Image 1 (cartoon, one colour):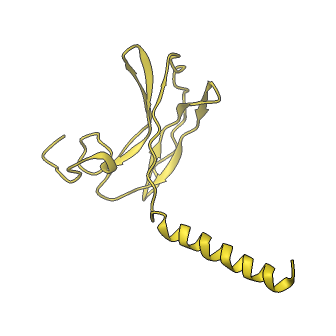
Image 2 (cartoon, rainbow, N blue to C red; image 1 turned 180 degrees about the vertical axis):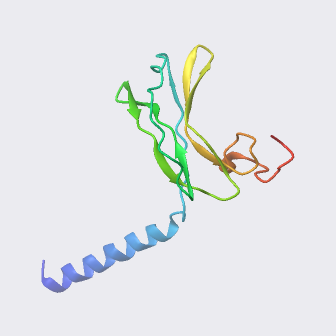
Amino acid sequence: MNRLARIAMAGGIAALLSLGAAAMPAAAHTSVSISIGAAPPPPRVEVVPPPRAGYVWAPGHWEWRGNHHVWIGGNWLRARPGYVYHAPEWRRAQGRWVYAAGCWDRDRDGIPNRYDRHPDNRRRG
C-alpha cells in the first residue's frame, strides 16, 4: 500500500471515529446494585480528624470487591453548599445484603438527586 493510500485511510478512520464520538452523550450515568448473601464485617474504629473548613468527613465502610469485603478508609470530601452527604451503607433486604453507595442529597429525603423526581422539595424529609 503506498503512502498516499495509507494517509487517506487514516483520515477516513479518524473521521469515522470522530462521528462516533459526537454521537456519545456528554455525561454518562451508571448505577450498580450489589446484593450478596454475606453480611459485611462490623465497621472498623476510625479516628475522625478535626473538622476542616469546606469539607465533609466521609466515614470508612466495607465494599464488596473480588468476592470478599474490602475496607475503604474514611476521607474528606469537598462540601457542596445546600447538600447533605449520606455515607455508604449495607442494608438487609429479602434475606440479602444490598450496598447503597454514598450520595449527596439536596432536600434531605434520602433519595440521591439524580434519581429524585423532585430533588428540591424541602417539605419532604
